[in-house]
Length: 208
Ligand code: TYD
Figure 1 (cartoon, rainbow, N blue to C red):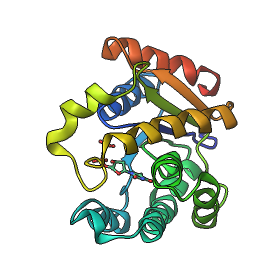
Figure 2 (cartoon, protein in one colour):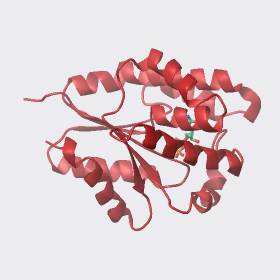
Figure 3 (cartoon, protein in one colour):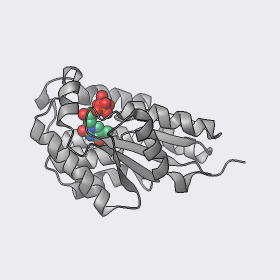
Figure 4 (cartoon, helix red, strand yellow):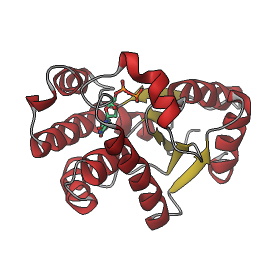
């Protein structure tokens, strides 16, 4: 009989290997007999994927800072409503490539709106549906080189200046310090397998 599922989010700046790790972690959990749903933000539900298109395409000035933050929050609200809440209620685990902490770090920390303002608009959208654990992939030397490699496919937000992305990294570290139980910084250096092992260690207490 399935109990309540778990909700895990993976976070980090650009090019730290998040998507690869979401897949690897999901695979490992499935081997343990856990039913896992992989999802992503912005997006994850049809409505949120439509909002993703609005957020990531077009010119940099397409949205002001406040409208951008509200669009991310609206997409997230729909994602929780249509995908995350039903899955967890059915006893499944949800692994999300990005969630609320991306908004806290990008729109709040780097975009200048402040982490608290972003927390409050998102709290309206998602209620109590915070992840059980949030794993932030980070490189000790900062992600500048990873971003340089990633640059060719960058979108409205990925293409922002280096200073913006440095503030994102700083904000993730700040959030982890504020919420050490939920949010863990994971060293993203070394082989993919070594990183997956670190992620598993950081959720060991949640495993059945
Ligand atoms: P995506 O193609 O998913 O990038 P990545 O592979 O880096 O995850 O694009 C998502 C972009 O949107 C990324 O630059 C981070 C940004 N973002 C925010 O600014 N706020 C948010 O709340 C979320 C979920 C993403």
